[in-house]
Image (tube, rainbow, N blue to C red; front, side):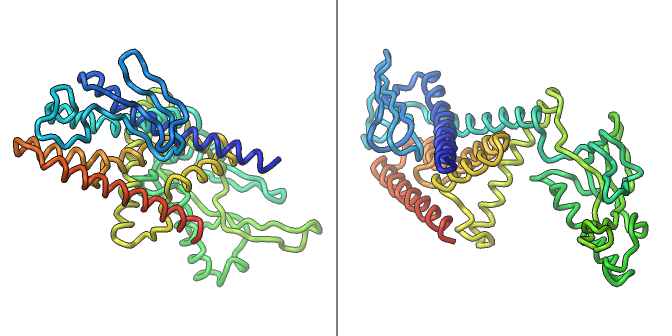
Amino acid sequence: MQVLSYVLYFIIAIAILLFMVLVHELGHYIAGRILKFKITEFSIGFGKALFQRKNKRGELISLRIFPLGGYCAFKGEEDDLEKPASDSFNAQKPWKRIIVFLAGITMNFLTAVLFSLILLCTVGYDVPQIRSNSVFYNDITYSQPELQEGDVITHIDGQKIDFAFGETFQTLIANKQAEALEYIEINYGGIENAPDGLLSGYSFEATVNRDGETQNVELFFQIVRTYKDDGATLASENCLLCFTYSPYVYSFGEALGRCWLLAIGFAWVVLEALWLLITFQLPISAVGGPISTITMIASATQTNWLNLLILIPAISANLAIFNLLPFPALDGAHVVFTTIEWIRGKPIKRSIENVIHFVGLCILFGFVIIVDILHFLL
């Protein structure tokens, strides 16, 4: 039964990846239609066709066996003729072709914005909101006297809480907890010697939004001990921040302003990862291809359906950045070649450009296969 359940989530993950591809190719298709380009085929996936149908404009709509991508084929796009037919892709003005190339990237980013909006309005994301300023342990209530229920924490000791352009709340609190434990070691010789309750000698500042106003409050750690059933034998002891919180859920108006920055944040995280990869600060095994992506989506969805609200904008931003790269066969490289043609007044020899893109496509396929293998082996 568990295997069947995972298969179902795996199918859902494939459907989500296909949706991402559809959005990207739909961008090319819509831009091509608006600019009066001749479209020969709109395909999701590669390889043998599972389904094909021609519409009234003569465009072939295809669903192919390997959901590793897709394409929107334009008439004469890969021709190497010096004088292409007037209705072929390469005969169109460079600025029009650049718009078509960028349209898929734009659609992916807009999808990231849309699902970021949905995420912020439904479950929130990186900014915590206080649900209770106290917790109950072993018949003792521990509290944060300066916090109030409903406070939204925006900064810790002046550091902004933002998963892309600042630090996550969990990271900042973990850093402060490490500092508190160091303080305990210096002053008490270890947590086992520290007194119960408020760690009054160590505190830090949090900036909160309370009823529309910004305030600074002082937060303290608590020495919390738990005991076994006999009430006397120590089970554990911790240095904790004793309050409960959940992600802040934005109003529609707030989310409308925040979703753009959140989508940019997802894209920025991708760019940071790419930089770490090319500077050898991130192992190649940390990168995943389509199979790794599908597996990750399936596992995350099986854990909690709400994870999809985070994965969809993150993957959409990932696809936008990936396709913007000036690597042969990707949209970014097509933009570069077309821009060179626009500046020179004539294209680089089409046969040479086509070979470059073909080699780039082979390298990309080889790369995603290798990273998928490494991802599962290492």
